[in-house]
Image (cartoon, rainbow, N blue to C red):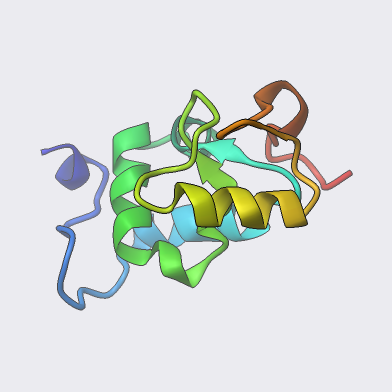
Length: 115
C-alpha cells in the first residue's frame, strides 16, 4: 500500500488525526501563494518523499484544513468533484485558467519564496 510506505497510515474516512507525513504535506500546501498551484507530484517531489498518490490521499483526508484548490492534477485540472469550486476560487485569486484547467506554465509554483 503506497500510503503505508509514505508513513500515512490512514485511509479515507473516519476521524484519524494527521500523521507527521500528512502534516508536512499540509504545511507545504498551506504555503502555496494565492494565484499559484502545485501538482500532487510537485508536492511529493518538493518533500523528497511519497508520490502524487500519497499526497492525494492526504488531501482527500485532510485537505479541508488548507487551501486545497491550489493542488491540481498534472494536466492542470482540479480534482473531482470540486472542479467548479476550485476553478472559481483560483480565478478570484488571480490564477491563470483556460477552460477547466490552470495554465501550468504560468501558475506552477516551485516552492521558492513568493513573488
